[in-house]
Length: 206
Image (cartoon, rainbow, N blue to C red; front, side):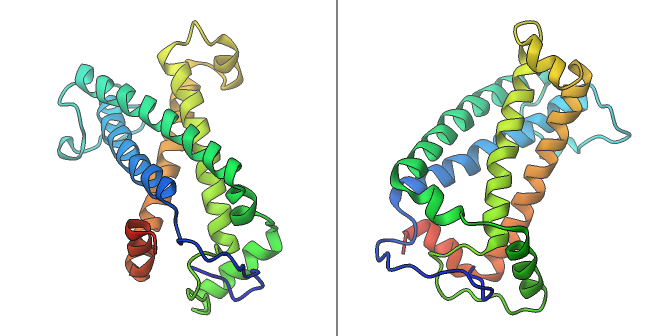
């Protein structure tokens, strides 16, 4: 999804998404799906809001099983996310795809999207809203992992625990970070449905 609000073009002629990016994208998708659904089951065991998630959309069957799924997906997400960041930095893709970025560009592209004027001709280019969203997801995933470490080993990570307030505050930080990730995934899927070429590009690379 490209912007009509001043995003520069590039002479890069390789695949829209290289193989390493497609692989890490789909591994991340699987890891997040497992983490979210098992996390819902863990939340149901000790809720702190006035609702529960339907058991039919949770993973693990019982608390112990959900925790096992959750930790397995956590390590997968952490390792795969590290590979993603290293590859992005090593290939120069991090700077090329996500920067420059400014509040003015984000606002301009958001307004263009609302007016239906956001172009999708060159899928190699990210508009400012996409850049901000993807950078947010990276930061949110780091917050998920850090707060998850506090919940897993609160005694072994006292500094992280104190930075987040306490153990119960870390639970809420973890939950809200998960909710933000689910919201991003919902919008991401909606955009893929509106512009199916983006999904095909993430499968085939071209």
